[in-house]
Image 1 (cartoon, protein in one colour):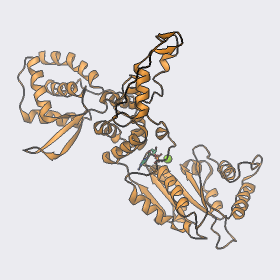
Image 2 (cartoon, rainbow, N blue to C red; image 1 turned 45 degrees about the horizontal axis):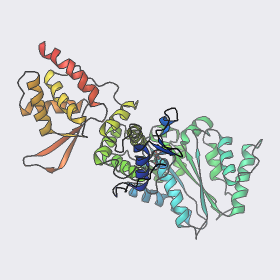
Image 3 (cartoon, protein in one colour; image 1 turned 180 degrees about the vertical axis):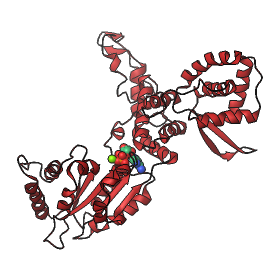
Length: 435
Ligand SMILES: Nc1ncnc2c1ncn2[C@@H]1O[C@H](COP(=O)(O)OP(=O)(O)O)[C@@H](O)[C@H]1O
Ligand SMILES: [Mg+2]
């Protein structure tokens, strides 16, 4: 018979991660005839999937996950709540339009508001909300069918015309006495395909029943497609009822990454440097969705490699896969000393997230020796770093603390794998120096 070995849990590792760690580290299984190694023919290749070394809960990475709180949107939420304030009064109703680029959190903000308002005021009024994505339901009957089905999942909708469905909606709302917030997300698809007739039909649903605001309407659209909403719709809704969401800056993206990591990843499996790299990689398109995808991708990549900590190379590898990012970095045309500066950066970034200017300088000097050329002065080094930053190869961050003379800059390379660039530079530099 085999013996039981007791292993005390490291208190710094959460129980669930520890269990997974043990399962991974001790691949020997107990059978009634003693210990023997597991058969390699078993599905060992699946062991790392869902192992929980890093991803503690996958739900926060789902595209339809609504975070319990939105970060850095307090002002916008307050503004939106003001626009929608009539929904909390007994017979009131509101209309509003939310616009902004992809990934500015339009859908999240509206859904957060709808949930919060119905919970907070549940003693005053029964408020429910239905979100119809008009990318999928882009015609009037499809939108109405979604609403009818929401109000009554067993409602026979087949063969009903739009008019009949509208009167069903009207009847059901009157009967239930509840207030319904209809959210038409990505409404430009509907407007393009079916026109704006349905909006007016919905807005008129209470006609003839004064003091009975049974329905509110929220439209969501991308900023660029606002022309579909122009004039007619916007003037009807009132320009003051339009909320424009600004793009997130790097700090905002990092805050979103931090929140999502806190919700879904094992403590200690990432640090600020990783979150910053993720934010930097998403910064040029400024899409919160990209932040979440990169974080999850990097976590899975590290897990698959059997590690319990995300490393810079995980973020670099997954951000490389993002089609919206730099395709191949143009290093071939750089002057030789600029290449050597970049080589210095690459060598260090294989193991850390970012490198300070002073460290670039010392590694650069070693590299010059390696290639048998004299190192250039500090001003030239700065010039090259600036050039690398301007061309989008490096991302710079100034430290908040100043060290002696002037501020220190830190450089990272979120869009490429340092090892790949290093290899290319090592063959390019000698050829370029010989010319
Ligand atoms: N302020 C925020 N705080 C937390 N998560 C956010 C925030 N803004 C956006 N997100 C998340 O980013 C993703 C994209 O947001 P979404 O609302 O779908 O953007 P949009 O509708 O503008 O394209 C979603 O997963 C959302 O939960
Ligand atoms: Mg959306």
